[in-house]
Structures are given as C-alpha cells and as structure tokens.
Length: 419
Image (cartoon, rainbow, N blue to C red):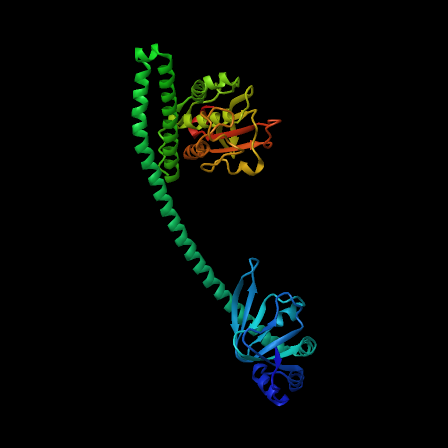
C-alpha cells in the first residue's frame, strides 16, 4: 500500500465529522490527527487474517472486500465495504487477532487510525461507542441475512442432489430387481433339469456323469440363493418387504437352520448348540422371513469360525423400556469383528477381513458371498419392529475372540399378559 497525496488535516476532519456525528470537537480533532490516508491499488491487502489488531480503517472512496481463508485453501467472500464504512475495529475491541482478510476490490483510498488514539477517544466518548455499536449491529444483520440466503441456497442444492440420488437409487433398485427376476427364471429351470438328471439311472450308474450333474445342481442352487438375496435386498431398499404374521416357534426356526447347515457343520467339525429356545413363547411373525434372518446369521458365523469351533444360539425374554421382548443371540468362536467394522456390518455388500472371493462355497472359512445377508437380516428385523446389532472384542485370526449377534423382537401386549 502507498501513501496517498495527503489531504489537509481539515479535509480529514470534515470527512469524519458526519460519520461520527455527536463526537466532541476535541475527540474528532484527535482522530483526524491520527488518521493516515493510504492509496491502494486493486488487490492490495489491507489487513491479514491472524494478524494482531493494531489499527482501525475507514473507506474514503473505492471498495474493499472482506474474506475468509478456508481450511481447504480456498477463499470465502463475506461482504464488501464502501465509502464511509469502518472495518478492523472488532480485533481492537476484543484485543484479539484479526478473523478475516481485507483487500482492495478496486483502486481505493482509506484512512488508517492506530490503536492507541482510537482507544483513547473511545474511552472518553460514549458517542463513538454507540456509533460503532450501531454499525456493528447493521453488519451483523447483513451477515445473518447473507448466511441465511447461502444456507437456503445450499439446502436447495442439497435437496435437488438428494432427489437425483433417490431417483438413481430407485432406477438401480428397479434394474437389480428386474435383472434378478429375469436371471432367476432360467436358473430355476436349469436347476429343475439338473435335479431330474440326478435321478436318471444312466447318470446314477456313471460316476463321472453323477459328479458333473451334482456340480451343476450345487452351482445352480447357489445362484438361486444369490438371486433370492438380491431380490430380498431390493425389497428392503424399496420398503416393499411384506410381513405376513402367524405364531412362530423360534426353536423350530433355529432347528431348521441347523438342518440346512448340518453337512457343512459336520464337514468342518463345528459344534452347534441351542440354549433356552424351548422356553420362548410363540412369536407373531413371518416364519419365512425370520428363517432368513437366522439363516444369514448362522451362515455368517459358519463363514468366520475356523474348523473345530463352536456356534451357540441362545434365547430369552427381556424387558426393554418396560416392554417384553424375545432376545436371541448367535455367538461364535470365530475371528471376531474389528471395532471400526461393527457399525458398518449391516451395510449392503460390506464384508470384514479378506474374503476368499473365489471360494466355491459360502460355508468355507472366510468363504465368498455377495455380502447381502446382514443387510437383509436388518431389514427383516426392522420390519418386525425389532432391532439387531453385533458385539465383538475385536478381529484376530490367531486368538479368535468371536462375535455375538443379537436380535430383539418385541412381544405384543397380549403375549406379555400370558407370561
């Protein structure tokens, strides 16, 4: 910044007089004597954010811009200040560093008044304090209006972006659902033909053919399960999951899941225990949907439990905020869950650790899979009005701290009264 061709002391005093109306002549003269006129070119920095507040400024002509430096290195415009406006006084009043940067937006002339004479006059002149308070209040009001306008604009943009994302999500869900339906149909037909071939005498009498057909049946069954999982996920995402309630024995549901995994459990020498399930009351829920919940939870336990481990499914009734609930827990002696993964487990396609993507079976240790089971389970439990969560001491393939998945299903009042 450069000194301007200095106007006379009388010119400065007369310039300040209407701006500081009511100020005593002695005080007005003191400020005029302390004021230093400065001529600035466009882009010149007047005061920098973070610097000590050692002066107050008044715009004589031109325009200055007040801006804030953001953490990402960008600049955020706050407001413009024109002739007759003061700036820089807040840092002096608060005895703090400057909170914004001010630069000339166009060729400008300003007056600089150092801290000491400004505070001397302010200390003996209530009029100056009132003037500054009025100006600061107006500035705060303008800043509030600008902030509100920017927030409204940002909210509108966010709303529009959310609507676009929702449309894309619906389009994606529709595509997934249609694709899964279209693919499931020929796979179901292929599965049927393969099962018919299994019963063919020629196939049964030819070991090589029998092995080939069993491979086809196994693969088509796996594909069928994947397509069903995709469709279930699509229904959960779209809110189209329909719950058809009837009295359900959760003990029978868990036994059915045990039978489903019996061969895998035996092959990998994993013990399966049930505790307290027989004592549970009948639960009014959708038996098919609840079966899927515990199928996925047990499948998850089998997948992450090393050979020779143990899976325990236990049940009890608990009181939650004055309401009776059935609580079931699926506990394993597997590799556990890292703390950063616990809150993400129920997201679609999320898996912990390094999964064997090319595994031929989802029941192998860390076997592959689409990563939809827990998301489906959460959607089904939520549709029943319940909650599901996981607990684990951490992830460790050496010590195998294990994990525990909880499902709470609220009992209706009529069931509570029977207990």
